[in-house]
Image (cartoon, rainbow, N blue to C red; front, side):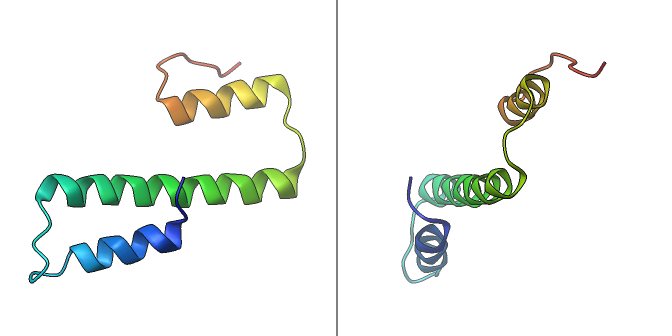
Length: 73
């Protein structure tokens, strides 16, 4: 996965009117940028917090994947 900084630069460049990226390409860059930012944040938080319990890991997985399963006890 590309870094958020690199994707942010590509998005900024592609958003210029004179570049003329297709809307689909800009949408994909926005999505990829947000995913890279989220991945970097998750990595940092996991390093700071240490290992999660199985239940916590399942709940976080459900949040990220958009699972409709209710994991609250």
